[in-house]
Length: 360
Image (cartoon, rainbow, N blue to C red; front, side):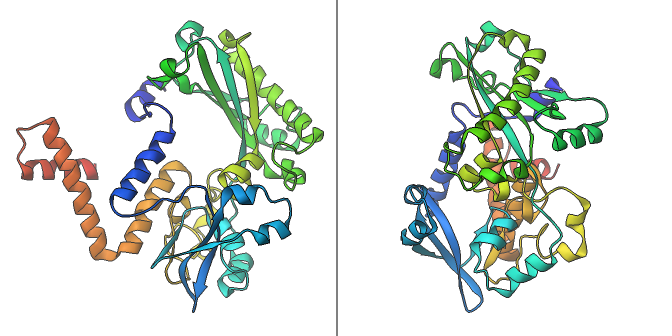
């Protein structure tokens, strides 16, 4: 509900890029480095251990039109004591690790998990500010009937003729207090629904923004459904949509390096907990010494799972003593913030309160 969201959600002030900007600044303040415009080509394995990665300039890779061109792009080795992969086990075992490693063959032969499905994303530019249009500041969900299993089956079988089973509708412009100053008289909207990679796979080898007329026609049919839903449930946007663009699982694959366009890591089914899959997911450890998993595959799917997956990965790399030191540092920082809010608290009181808040 909107009230529930008001309690638990946080939004950036300004562009969401501020999150990565702040995080990379923090990494650098501790002596680390964050490489920009650098694509990982593979993980370096020496004597059975992960010892670093090979990276190339992303812009140079995007200019390549053939495998021969890709082979000519130079790669730089970045050595490290440990390597953490946060881009899914599917990228790890299908792309980053040498394909002749026994563990790669084992993954392909034994693993019964699969990547999650992808999505289609409709980005809309609206004329007028949010208050003038009367846009809601909470998220909306559209459901195509009460029998969702049947709705999904029909949609996946015929996506151009059947409305999607569920659609998320959000208005980021209403959540950013700087939006009107940065983009006066402009609002935006995003709609997200399910989309299978298999629908678009025939165009996966085509150049970005030049995948052909059939691809564009297929996208137009999906777009039509989403625009109808938007204008049906938010009728005040009629006549105000100045621009719209549909992203597909191919967009996720191209711009997010998502394996086969999967949005949320491993597909959320009970099979992921089967004993045969314990080496591949719900763990930060791999069979390769010095190589760890982070993100959703280290714990559980989706956003929160990925966050905790990062914590588990950090703990795995640091070991027991290092994890205790990290926990103490986090609690000390939280206690400091609590004392700033309430100067009457002693250091011990603030620390104990931090422990309580951290474990609630």
